[in-house]
Image 1: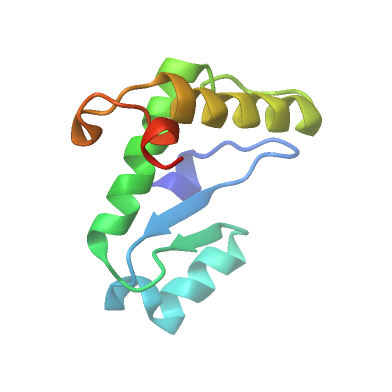
Image 2 (image 1 turned 60 degrees about the horizontal axis):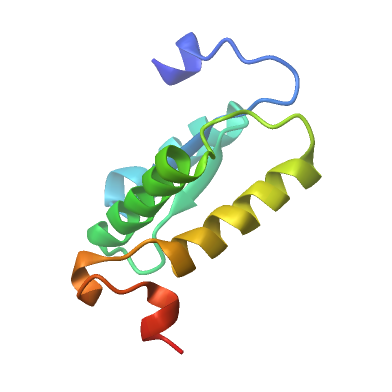
Amino acid sequence: MAIHDAGLTNGQYLIHYSDRGLQYCCSDYITLLRNHLIAISMTQNGDLYENAIAERINGILKVEFGLYVTFRKLETAREAVDSAIKNYNTLRPHMSLKLKTPASVHQ
């Protein structure tokens, strides 16, 4: 469905995120993704929760720190990502850190 509905234009591409489940690692599936120029992103060691953590952080960065827009220049995107990560680590308290920021806990 993603391949059919993508309607991609110049400079746009798809990324397939997954754990290292057998169905995602088989050669036929990998070949299909590569034939359609779909980038592959998998967890390091097959931990299905690893990708969920990354997706949660990505969601926070997009919604709370303005990374939901499409950037016209790579340098602008890099600056926005750097700023969002700095703010995430220095301004956003975390329940799991007893409402402290990551920067204050990991000094």
